[in-house]
Amino acid sequence: MRYGCVHRQGFLRKESEPVVSTHRYLFTSESVSMGHPDKVADQISDAILDYCLAADPFSRVACETMVTTDLAVVSGEVTTKADLNRGVVDGIVRSMIREIGYTDPSIGFAADTCQVNCHLHAQSLDISRGVDVGGAGDQGMMFGFACQETRTLMPLPIYLAHRLVENHAALRVSREVPFLRPDAKSQVTVEYEADGTPYRIHTVVLSTQHDRSAMDGKGSFSNEARRVIVDKLILPTLRQERPDLIKGELVLVLPGQSQAAIPDGAIRCHINPTGNFETGGPHGDCGLTGRKIIVDTYGGRGRHGGGAFSGKDPTKVDRSAAYMARYIAKNIVAAGLARECEVQLSYAIGYPDPLNIWVNTNRTHATGVTDGQLVDLIREHFQLTPRGIIETLNLRRPIYKETARNGHFGRELPNFTWERTDKAVVLKKAVGG
Image: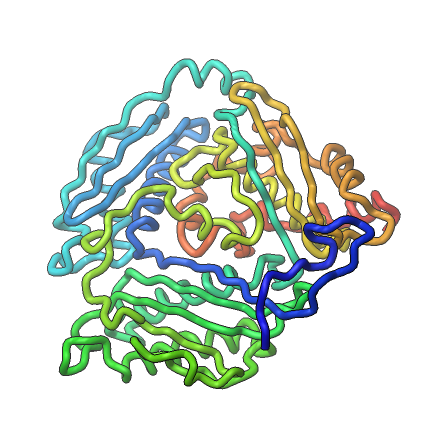
């Protein structure tokens, strides 16, 4: 099978040009576990945000966290009626680290023994001046995306990557796989038909921190442990989510092994491909809030405005408008108005209305519908001021800690209001459907 650059139907070509390729192609996305250093930082920042919103729904929060060996540093700008003395912040940080699973001081980072430094101060009055009257808390552009590849209307590679690390955490917490530690990363490559339809799962990468019980006599992660990861994590996850795309045997690719020996139809599984992952978490790699923005959104499928989410209250359109853009795109696809949809919104700091609304359906829109008509529908049926977004999605609540792990999109949880498809019917009726 040949792979190469593919122009899917209508993408990067003029209206009159034919589709120029019939080759299948590969696309990859990654996710990271709740114990990954950057995600530890994200969850701490959002735990502080949730604490503030629980006490004061109108809190203004821009919280940044850094974690490294035996240290967590919390800083940023917060204006709130909540009590944020150093003792409170210390307790929030340690509780979050404990919830994630870092409780063993011997691995270099633990809830009860790490040092916690707090450097929070009030938000600038220059920013507040514009936000107080309903303006955006910052400038920037935000994107939302949806497509028909999964039941939650998320791209398949990032959806599967999220489910792998989510199930990794479940196996770790239940002790069903006792050698697992909190830090882990997943990566999924999907083979697509030339028209963008998923054909099969091609490759899975899973790197997990582990204890010494998973090591062989040579001090490396054992092949027996690799097989446990395949049998108890990877295969059950793929079977649960997309059994139709398992079109070959799952084959281990061992460190240093040439892929030339792997059968063409096999699903290649790289498990701890460096050979070992005993040292991990914040002890192995410094973590920072907002460093996993592609993991947080669509896995590289669709654009990203550049702004991070975690630690920011909903007046920050980096977060709230990105949630709204996902809500819009998902409802357009759920209404059958397009098979995939990307939405851009942009804002100026202190100004309430979006500067632009842009829609790209990659020429997958329904017959008789244009991208321009979809823009008009968005203006008519969605409130796009910061205040309107907050009210529509009910965002002044302590709901954010859960968003900071396993993806902000694609999980239909009760508090993830941006995942609702309650506008689909009215959108479909608006175009005569």
